[in-house]
Length: 584
Image 1 (cartoon, rainbow, N blue to C red):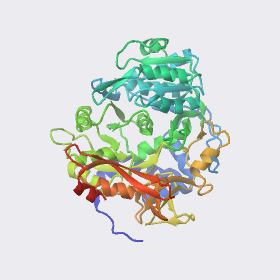
Image 2 (tube, one colour):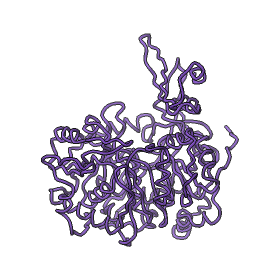
Image 3 (tube, helix red, strand yellow):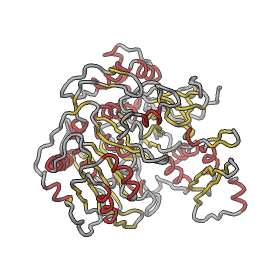
Image 4 (cartoon, rainbow, N blue to C red):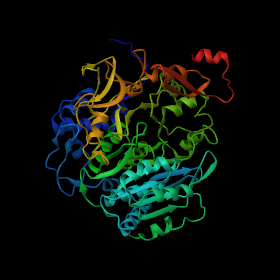
């Protein structure tokens, strides 16, 4: 099937292509590995064909430090069960802190409770070292679980690095999660220490979480210690450590890194839990290190003068993605609060004040700004901003057009798609390729992504199941508590044995770009006709009056079903007969 290509909205000039990290890496591959890679497509094909060659190149090019060497790159390529870099021991956090200018800024952070402030690399190292020493003093060691009920604040970043440094396994939930949601996640992994806040502020309103904290402690019988950050500044919580006394116990310590096996658990992330208990997805130190060195350098193109922001909470994998940016020479920007308080301009205000160069957000936020006629550059100096990243859901062609209308032709807009499952992008940005309206630029290096029909035939120019046909280091090690691996196999490998089925509809175009059409497991079957919910959302959300929508397939007693649509309208809009007719 041949489509007329959509308009090219951006194409990197020669200077930008030459400056890209990807260009330097491609040149190195040619010179040091003798591989003919004349363009990105050739580089991608090599990366998914010669897995040993590609991932060992990433290891060598980025100078991965190992206390003991690996004996093979990919000792077993079975999915599930691939064995990467056996024999290697290393530490993710060591690669964050190596070779740093202690006076340079590492993190800029702000929230509804705190003004914009900075931590230098020296401050981040000292605070991380203090937390690591304090955790060791509480008896935390390699493999112990430390859980965090923390907002997107700089203390959470330091606490995560501290856990990684000592080999403890990190897991976090945002404090807007309720008791049941948190216990459904944390109770599975039997944590030893809980790091929490007394409350938070969102949309101008304070939320006291001390009662929630008590319920969490009661529901986590393996807890030995609870540390509370007085974010709201309320009364201390009984039988807990204050954050200040906790850090004070380790103050002055040197930051030391415990070497752990390549597949040692770094963190546990969670699925949505829509079909039962959330899946507790375990990723390893080495797999995440290699994947994020690749992704953040070569696809995000993070450079020393970049200030990278992504709007996220600690309950979304994009937080893990954001804190991994410090594996590069870029700095990061954090924000905790509502993206719409006091108005939709708050994040664009932050972009100006913090000098953000790479602004990451959700497709939904960009669409909301478009519908609300937000003008980001009006009254703001956003000249530092050169790239916008979008994820979470497909960005519509209209959303692409809005970004270029508002920011001009020099903006690099990169849309990405991947997931918690791999804590990275399967398809995403490529700084040396053009941006076509409504499309993702390419398949990510090392990710053998394809579109398949139900019989396992590859499709080009047609919509099919998103599959990954070869293993990648950041695929889950296992699901926590899934002793026989059956839940992992059922989640990804039941449709195509030995091949990862991601659960998205995807089209790979003749040009190698990608279009995501939504979840394939959210398809509605109407009398034998399969209908993707993304088709409904696309039509409904195109209406200026509609801010958000939810499609529900409601089973009926006669064996049929009825589609019900819920909509959120703009404040000045009424759901009258005319609007009902246009929605229908």
